Image 1 (cartoon, one colour):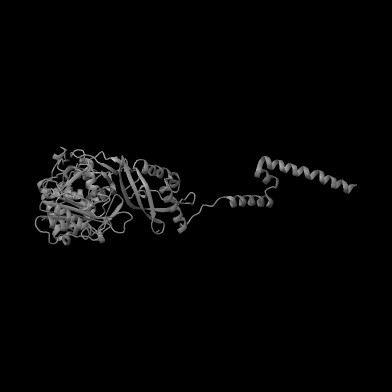
Image 2: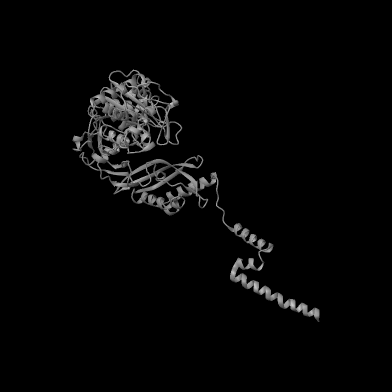
Length: 557
């Protein structure tokens, strides 16, 4: 009996305990389980098993390099869907479906492109080139279109899936993000641009002038008296610095004639010179008038010569030297410090190869491009001194040039401390392009700033920019002496060898973050010619941009 009763008691008690445990688990989930087991080994095992189970069922995001199959399959999906007009499917295969949908929809709706055939080429890594053939049809007029493009496949970091890395250039290499393709009456009549001698200017003849021709048409197409045709055009997005571009003419309009100041001999020579140096740009001016005689860029997609915004390096010392002489802080033949180092605003500045000139003159420092000779004067200048000199004497940094096509007028912002010191040697926040620096040399040669222009202001009665003051005769004389000495005996001497007459020059090298070599600059004049050039990531200016500029000064002479 006793034994049976104990068994019965055990049976009666056990279900009650188990029932209580189940009730707590249902009500309190894992927390109830931990409490009932007292947080011991059983609880640890239960918790670990639950976590492991959840991890086993969590989808894993694939990482690592793309396989050849992933690249090929993704590219095929995108191109096939685009060709078949399945915009949603094509866009879903990209990294930005919204942007892809908009542009691919406009491809047929706005650009009126039909019968699209896309043929992939040979894959190289994650990149797949492809050719495009289509027909542009507008109001009964049709014309075939053919071009090449490419796409790159990337792995989506969130999903791990391969996607076409979306940029507008996938649809057409001339498109930038924000641009659209449109076929219709151009709105802007075509132009026939001619040089100063009346010879027609074409992109085929002068490859550098494609962007210039686009800019001339945009500004003067309606004013030149032409009649618009039907065209497929790239319409630039809001805020773009580039001009709209014609890709295909369905029916020709009647062009109006726009005369430029370009010299055909110098332009041809400039094209030949930049073709020898990757990432080079050059501008040639006539100091007495401001006329632009030549402009050329090795890269034809962007007009760095007119619109670039780059630190000019030591070519900026032409402006800084005029400021120091004006303020009696330097004089060509007086002693001037050029130590190895000079600290200002918490930055330690040094000269190239850490050279120093003991007991030298300011002329020697300018000719050898001594950074510390200029940095050492920073504490004696106001924060806006260099800005005012650039604006009031050299006509720069006021955003008011009107040369006839889009251009950047240079920037010399007001700065303090170390950045002010860096600006004195063309670093810091100072930004220029070859047009600006050619104008600086032209101002020294002529003695007065004359805004450069490509189209005579008489064509559209526009007002050219002016400078509020000129250098004193004493400052101008010394500045010419500095540049002449540099051309004959300083860092510019080798490049300027064989350039005779009334000459002056200044070299520059501008350090750029992420570049192994600096941008090489050179600005110079010879008689009534002034020129400046830059070779990006090329090295020292005397060795890179110098030969380009000197060759053009010789040609013009």
